Image (cartoon, rainbow, N blue to C red; front, side, top):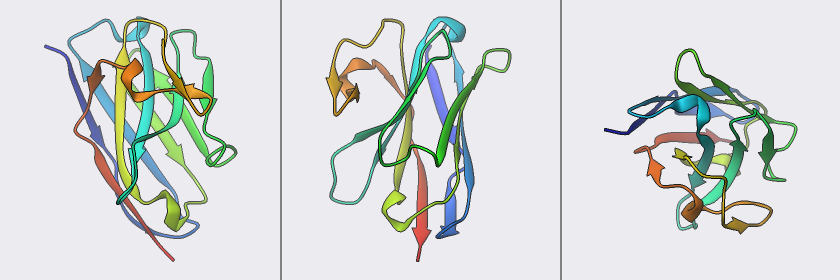
Length: 128
């Protein structure tokens, strides 16, 4: 049974940092394509960062230079290190996984429908 469980969210002030984790089980994690998405209040789900099985990363323009996606294949865990947080980063953050290279793209990043497996999310709230 595939499971993705996010943790690490919370409430921080602008300029602060958080590290999100996504613990995965039920599939061969090292070979999967992984991503972080977020959905803010009244907004559509948007891609934040992706990392493939070769550790190649891509980022949304809005988070470049501030967020870092990484994966630990020994621990079956995906991470999102977030620095310089802004109020506009407030959202529910979800990790996503798929065994295939992304087939669909939106705004330069793989679209949400490119991923079959999703976690429930962890809330990040940034106050000004």
